[in-house]
Image (cartoon, rainbow, N blue to C red):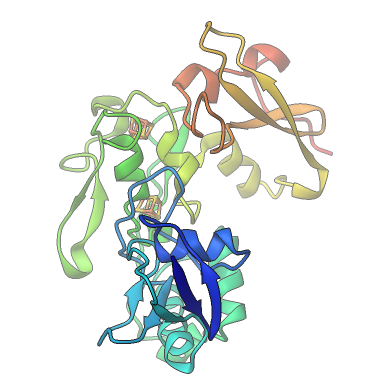
Length: 279
Ligand code: SF4
Ligand code: SF4
């Protein structure tokens, strides 16, 4: 079908979302709660666009294209709305480990400081209750990606849920149960999709806290997981010749980016336990 994006005619396929059509044509929209392998929940409102005939701005991640649709992706109304979203997030959570959000704030000229010192900020204690990953909900933007990855979009473990309302809204393990006492099987799929570093491998958190997390000394090597016959594709993140993190590409036909506890966290047998030596 033919649609019009910022006044330019382009082709789109029936069933595509506006975002998918934009990406197929080499364009994009900012996203925080969207992930290729998760069902769109349309909660962050970062990807909104203007559609002629629609009273409100629409989330491009979930609105399907329609023949002749006229879409505006960069109007003043769209930019103002996105700027407000990034400002409100920036004023209420710790964005220090959220490079995408920081980049969007810069691109849209968001100024979280204009809400002043009195702006309510999340101040949650670091939940460090196991050896594999930590939870810092002071950085949580409530995108629900972790809930989806733990639930029906990947893991089907349902260890996480969204609880509370308003300022009390939060991601919960059920009455704030420590992870070791929860249903969690430590696959780390929630960690992999978290866009802000609110969920972070424990080793990465320790290296960052010690000032020893050094992206400029890191590279990624691809391999196949050695544990079982499924053949999951692994990305080994290596710093100073030590594996420091394992991920899987979301476009892998075997994993779709998801792993089990062994593939994601069971790598200390390669280098031995402990951390990389100081550079
Ligand atoms: S590690 Fe896996 S099982 Fe545990 S909360 Fe995250 S997605 Fe759910
Ligand atoms: S912990 Fe991360 S993935 Fe989960 S809702 Fe918060 S920001 Fe999103």
